[in-house]
Length: 302
Image (tube, rainbow, N blue to C red; front, top):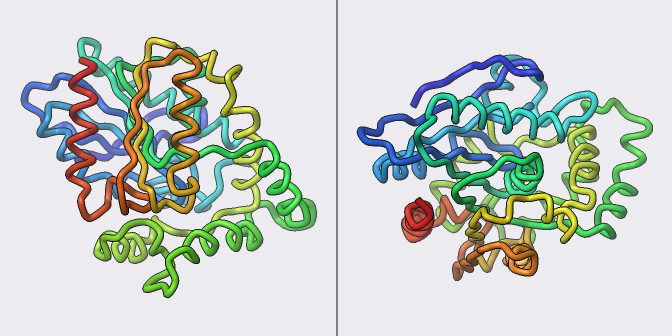
């Protein structure tokens, strides 16, 4: 694994590449989730290396290596933060294609990475295959309610301050599904070691700022609709994977709705609901089943 820092319209583009591949057949770009970073993807990246894929992952603004460079954790930008994160995914994609012009290109996104990926695809960027892990959707009513919930903090506090209200209604709410709790993040996985690694990692699980939550509310508006999906290249095949014990996407129901939306819009899409798995299929006890499914999907769409 090698770190990189590339020029970006939004400060630097920071991330890593796993390139220990003798005869590469493709590239995989990873879009990670909220309050985590590339470090959570070593295992799947090395697995995909062994299957012939070079793997790239840039850390979102306010995450991972950007924090080590001095950026505020859990904070994208003063303005247009959501769009800036998508901008950097597009910059990463352009770099990958320039470095590997003869290879096929795939996308693997998790949790927050899934709406970011949908937004990226709406920019006329295509892949040979896209995997959406722990995909979720937020309807207009919930976005409206979240905006109301956030408003007092957004109106009267420093935007770089942590949103206590949103933390209470997200992380704390998700973990409550697994009482009595062993840790603050039991909802991630049944693999205790992976959960403990997350909690011990300074680049994981940090509280998010008021501005970041506002950015997400604005970025999510009208994203999961037929009109929105009509802007995506209809030739892209999709694989949606999720656990049936994921509290963030209503135990997989939201992921299934996204799958059905793709089907309704004429896409080739597949859906896998894994029994007993929580929010992170890629760190679950039986994750090798998921790894094999992802690699199989990529190779089937070579």
